[in-house]
Image 1 (cartoon, one colour):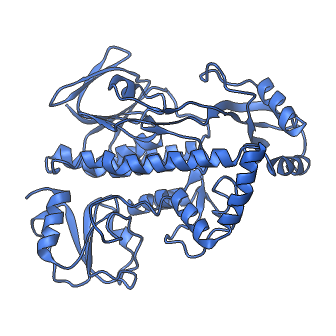
Image 2 (tube, helix red, strand yellow; image 1 turned 90 degrees about the vertical axis):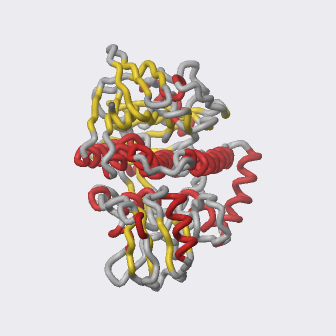
Image 3 (cartoon, rainbow, N blue to C red; image 1 turned 30 degrees about the vertical axis):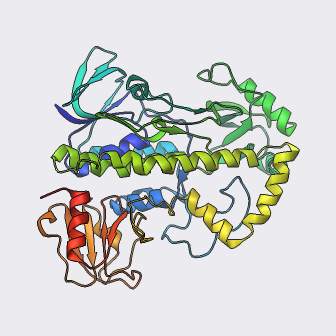
Length: 473
């Protein structure tokens, strides 16, 4: 029997596969499509996602292929400089097309030993108290201890598991594609910039080799969103919005996306879990979707591994939904707000002008940027200490940085006193006796996902938290 089956080979599924293999869990990833997608829906990663790659020791391969972009203008396209001294070593966005991100995550998952099976479509599932049976379109039936649906907004796993997906339907639709243009860029760019003064859902951007990314509002909402737009659709909408079609031609790919916001009513049904777009969909404003999925996987991976290995506390798997559902709910809320601020009608434009003034205040700007890049996320772990529940930064230690010590995916007790112990949990928690001028607490217990579980100096209290997160021993 397989330990964990993952349905869906996008960034979320590949991230989860790598995390599970890090902990020695057997993984089979099933992907319906025979080849990786060439569609570039996401353009990069924010700080928290870059941090989790750093915590696993694979960030350099992403940095080598990406481009650093300033954080200005990430909330509804309101152009304000990024606040100073953000609490992260990555105070920028890493520009990296989604197919590249997916390829790098796939390579990592395979290096770790994950089995990737393409052209495998899930069509049925059943479960009992011990396992999940997954039926494929070719008649094959696989059994696993757990199944995770990372299979996108139209998730088959979510539907088969009987999990509701409430929310708001698409009200505005946008066309997206990569293609050539028939006019020089120095002629097209002034037109594009003029249109974008009011129409923030419009844009042209050179991708190199004569290819441009084209984004333009659609005429309305299509009856069948699975039907891809045509080049003539792009031409007519470009003329309507910009007064010219820019001579677009030779499309690499064309797609459409809407502004629907939906969230799964629950992230777990017995031995079946949801992550990424299978659990939540929202407008792409702020570039948060891919990042949200990667962070779901980072939260779930070590918890599933603990269950497979038999030491997970009774409520550990339920903490995945308890922690990640509110985070996604906040993203749905801020993306919907951004869509409203990007509308061209007089009412939304008046609100936008007022909001632009508010973002001029450093505290407001910082609050919104930290929300978008997810470094302000704090899980409610029941502590009044403000550090508990937050992700920890890459603290400078006497010997290197903290993230360098997190590559194995263990918990970490960073002990500045040298008087504490992880005792019988030493196989799950590394005891790091070191000091950092950036940490005021005597000691912190950090979970494998980089979030602080405990702060203090009392051994008895520490033992209680070790048992809470890493099981009885």
